[in-house]
Structures are given as C-alpha cells and as structure tokens.
Length: 383
Image (cartoon, rainbow, N blue to C red):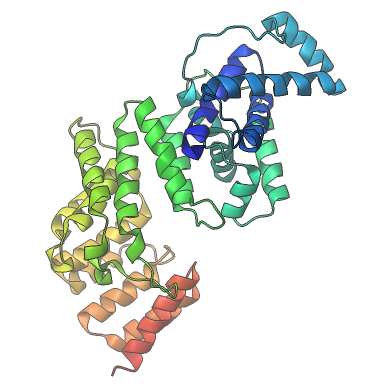
C-alpha cells in the first residue's frame, strides 16, 4: 500500500462527498473511517481503482452515520430531498476540489493552531492520533480542537473563494512546528505545499515551497547528535542537500521572474544566498541586507529589522550595526542575543558575556538556551 498515494486522495474524496450532499464535517469523518478500513483490508486485497474504492466506502460510511444517528434524521431527509441521496450515489463530475479544501481548512475564522490541525487531518489525511503526537498533546485534546474547527466553518461552502496567503501561513506554521512520533511535520508540510504548487499557479506558493526546500536542505546539520544547536556559520556545508538546494533555487528563480514579489519569495531569496555560499566567508551579506529591505517594505516586520542589523554587522562591521540596533525596540525577541553578538564583534567581551547570559534566560528552546550559556561561558573563561 502506497501511503503517500492514499493520503493524496483524501482531499479529492472529501470534496466529492461534499458535492454529493454531505457537509464538510460528515464527509471528513466518513473519509477517515474509509481510510482506516483501507489500512485493515488492503494488505490482503488492494483494489485496482483505489480512488473509486475510497469514494464508495466513504459514501457508505456517510450514509450509515446519517441513518443511525437519530439526531441526524431530519438532515438525512433534507439531504435526500435536496440531493437525491440513496445507496446508488448520484454521479458528480470528477473535479479536483483540493484547492478549495486548502482554503477551507485555513479559513480566517479559525485560530492558527486549529487551521494547522484541520489541514493536516482533511488535506494531509493524518489521523487525530498522529497529529496529537506531532504536537505533543493528548489525542482527546486534538480531537476536541478538530471538532471545534469543523463546527466553526460548518456553514462555509467548499467552493467559496479562498485566501492563498492564509493557506500559505498555515503550511509554514506546520513546517516550523516541532515534530515527534511517526509524523515529521516539516516533511508533511513540504508534501502538502507541493500539492498546492501543482493545484495553483501562484508565485508565492512557489516562494514558500522554495523556502521550505532550502531550509530542509540544511536541516541535518542544524543539530549535533546530543541535540545541541549548530549555528549557520559553523555548519558542515558539505552535508547540505544539494538536490534540494538546486530545486529550491530553480523554483525561486521562476517565481521571481514573474515580478510579483511577496514575503515568501523574499525569505527564500535570503535562504538561497546562504545556501549558495560554499564557505561562510563567501556569503553575500550586502545582497542579503537588500533582500531584508524588500522584506521590511512588504511586511514591516520588527524581526526582519533585527535580522537586517545582523546582515549590516557582517557587511559593514559591528559599530555600524550597533548604531542601527539602537533604533529598534529592546523588547524584540532575540534582541539581547543580537546585542551580545555585536558587542563581541566590536571587542567588548565582558558586556557580550553578560548579554549572552541574560539572553539565555529568555530563550524559547533548550537548544537555544544552552548555546547562549555556552557562548557566555566561553567569553568569561577563554582557554
């Protein structure tokens, strides 16, 4: 059984059930049950027409649920009247509504966490247990989150116009989430973004896919075997995945050629410049700073302004960068860590050590905290 092929069919089957008359929540539940039955039965006898099999079984699951639930009786009658529901399902055109499902699962009514969970469930075909394990929450908690999400968008039509930018933010949120259990969320986000890239011709979709591929190419070098963080400058570049870098840069160049610049294309351009440097000394910091200027113009992001300061430090030196840093808000995330780095760069090691230690207390991950503590100790006790 090809699990990727099976999961790729999920959004198409959900969409077909919806167009036959099922509401989104009931269709999604029925498809999940059909998937479980496929896992149970396909190991001994796999059908030639997998999509047709899933549609048939999911439709029967939907009908069974509708008929056995007294509370749903009136809705079943209404569906029968409106859509001529019967065991011989109505024929509907085989149109791929996957794109609409992406938009529905990233509906603005939903919180970011709910949209991410619903996207993984309805578009990605993951089970509630798999999603719960990936986000390190109990399965019951994730089930409640998904149920609430489906209720929130119960009255939204599947074919309603959607917002590409919102769907992309949800996918990037999934990509940046931690992972555990049997599901790698970064890999899953890339798979779903590839599907979206095929479904819609949009430069920002290409930009996001390029950004993910370029980050993924460096992933194996970001942490040591003991879990400690490896800074970009210290990573073993010979271990970067050149195939992913080539694919990412190719998709980025095609997107940029359309001259419709967006946030994700800009971030991907910065990642591409890092990936293109064979040694850290060859990094084109001047061009990276120019791309941060573009990103700031697009988003007015304070984090982008902070990252621009780092690019300035590499391009023009620590003193120039410290002057720029003084214009930013000190409460920004990583402000203290950047300030420490700049003080170290201009030679004030005592101040830098104190700032690294201070930044460690605000770190949001164990790996980042440990890296900052080690840096402070190294400056205080040089060998």
